[in-house]
Figure 1 (cartoon, rainbow, N blue to C red):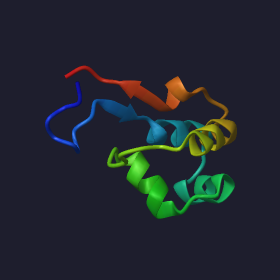
Figure 2: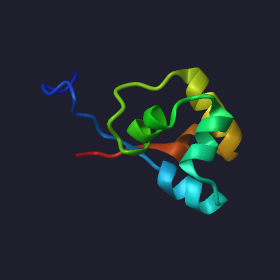
Figure 3: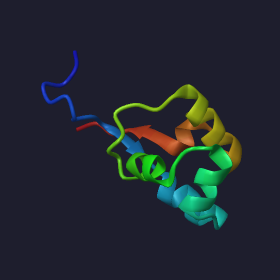
Figure 4: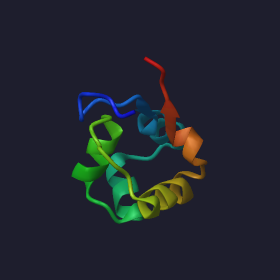
Amino acid sequence: MPPDDADAHSIGVHLDRLLAERGMTLTELADRVGVTVVNLSVLKNGRAKAVRFSTLTALCRELGCQPGDLLSYQAE
């Protein structure tokens, strides 16, 4: 059952860590993936409500990772 608060979710985004490990900037990743820096920042800060599979695929391709490296479920 979905949470009462439509903005609440328990998914953690590990984009900061992956960028740091790869010595890549958010701007560089945005250019490589073909999304705006603003949209990538929304994802990075955990404020995104959804992620397209095509965007997730491009992120994983450019970061050399699996979806589970980028996202995790965090029990409350």
